[in-house]
Length: 398
Image (cartoon, rainbow, N blue to C red; front, top):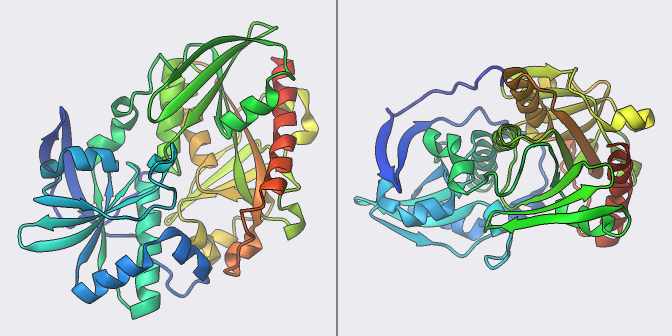
């Protein structure tokens, strides 16, 4: 998957056992953070437990961001070195929502004589680094506090994530064309519009699969994923789908537009070339990955797509220098493209990748520290309908 990230390690690996999974841990420094870069203050209130973080400063708690699911941490606290673990009442998404797995969870932890604030981020380095960077920026903003946040990696949990949460042949079968992202919404819009026969459905806490056979014989699989697959987790998800036999991955999501704000909720993109960028610069270009939509609709090709591991950091000169000719920006699509290209080469098969994005913000709003609201459900539904029309066009060609 290209060049691996390398950050200073401040502790040796430690190994414990959790439910048959070896939990190796290592503490890593967060990548350099541009504390002076603009950022939207409203996002702090939306994404962070601001009162809790103020308490952490007052009580002088250290803050650890772990690459583990909250469920694993709660089931096996001793495997993570914790004497006690108290869940704290904060989530971007309500705890009773089926999408609650998608957001970081916060815990007050006792480890010996020490009290910690622990964040269970999803088991992926990119998402955990992004979460840690956001917390660090907020602490610096309110108290000029630096160095309180650390990243704790669990490589085995990261590598075995999809085995742990049960993504297997019950959900995805060989030769499936898999729809990710707004899969459930697109499935609802398409039913009745496309000639198809229902084949199977399967569900657990993390995934729902609904499979239909088209009149051509092709099988479309609407796979709803209820975890956050930003960055490296998106790559692992695509690798797993390739191993299960998916022949095409269709990813419908929201992105930031590089164009003027008029594109918000009005423009749909389907890129054919990708740039994967992180704190070290450009890691990989992907230019030869087939997008099957473009075989039947050349006008839908939006060209270059840019993925960066921590979106606010594209305000750096290095990030901006690579945006020329780019139409859309997000945190995961190019990483997914890298994983699919690598899996195709390693398995000796051709796996298609068809991102279909609608615009939720312009990149100018990110760089200037202002965001368009994401709560206009009427406009979002209109944008989803436009994306769904492209999915229908693709299905008609299969």
